Image (cartoon, rainbow, N blue to C red; front, top):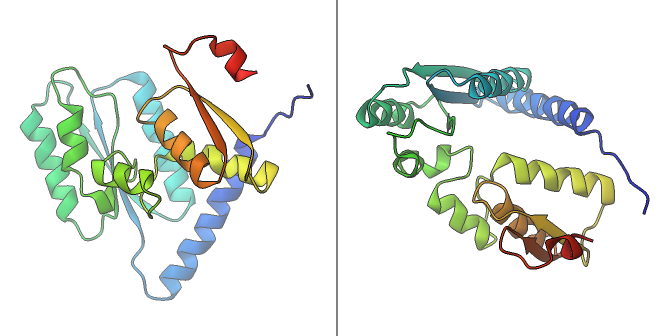
Length: 201
């Protein structure tokens, strides 16, 4: 079976250019510059690099960004106070709390605290529900990026059989929902699947 290697970086650069143009047009029409707030707790090296890359991409796309860094020993209340403040800021349109959080902090409480309209990760139960029911919502970026790649590489996905490996709330489940909305037949393979290799073939 022939293998087609997709250049995700090239597509990423193209999408950033397209978004930058869209931001310019909207600002020329009198709209406010979009603002992204990122909250980073602790000094995890992978999370630090991930946040730096997100900020770089946001700024290339014409957004302004704010990074709030909290010590790894911060309390749940201190983190919630930061999120509440960002929820109320009119110049902040998207909030992203970098996960995972230290073990003593509740990710669920923080995800549920972010305003659904500012939940750029698409993790809030309101956005999860909207996605699963096929309504407009903020969608987790990794599955949305995967869908964009598939559509640009393959065109119409209707009738295709898609196999999603994994059923996480962050990637697997939203990916399956997006593919269903694109009229695919979808199989989800996970750790309890019987003969997962055969299903993937």
